[in-house]
Image 1 (cartoon, one colour):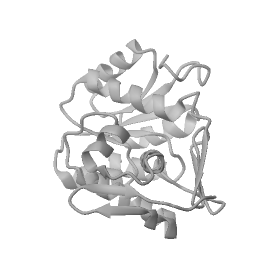
Image 2 (tube, one colour):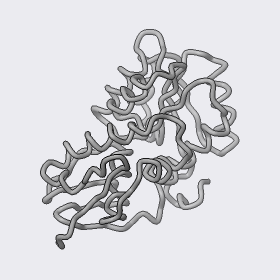
Image 3 (tube, rainbow, N blue to C red):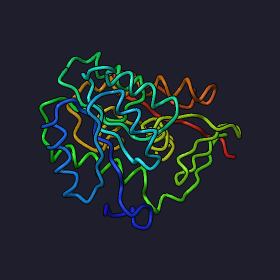
Image 4 (tube, rainbow, N blue to C red):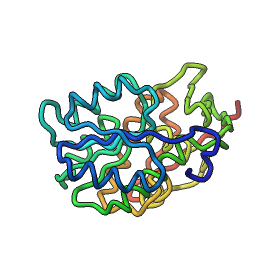
Amino acid sequence: MIPGTENVMDKFKILVVDDESRMRKLVHDFLVRKDYEVIEAADGEQALDTFYENKDISLIILDVMMPKMDGWEVCREIRRNSKVPIIMLTAKGEEHDELQGFELGADEYISKPFSPKILTARVDAIIRRAYSSDAGEVISIGGIEIDKSAHVVRIDGEEVDLSFKEFELLEYFVDNNGIALSREKILNNVWNYDYFGDARTIDTHVKKLRKKMGSKGDYIKTIWGMGYKFECQCEN
């Protein structure tokens, strides 16, 4: 069991979606060694059927290029109904593909070929942050309320629908109120690994987060050439 997630679930269930059976087996074997329960799907349609049949899925590892329904469509459909963490797998390395995944609400993006150990490390990190048993704190600032245990954000009393990564990004900003944060620092803390992609990934998430926050999005200031700063002097 992942440290910090004791008494949350007996075993975390992960859905692995890939049309290549060898890839599914590789990922399956590594995750099972880490004491995860793994279920599989071979195409996009089967992935959705499996997802809706299993209400206790903790995380989805989703390939992009698949028959019947590709990973983009699956991610879009799941995001209409669930905030479950999603890791996208793809053989493509172009920046626009990565940004499309984040636009659709994916939480991580890993290009093939990849190290199974790196994948499991990222799974561990997401599970730890999403289901930590000690995340019971509620933060309130400037009309924003962040309930860490419920993974819920309310702005002026109204619940805001944020993805897992948007929630983490807002939480990190609020925890560092008034502090200038470089894109590199944000990536290393919110994504929790040395990110080798383009730092403009952050800009995509910030843009979406600001829009969902309405007028409160103005608290997130752009520091040109560096990164961002959450700045709120008001008290609730």
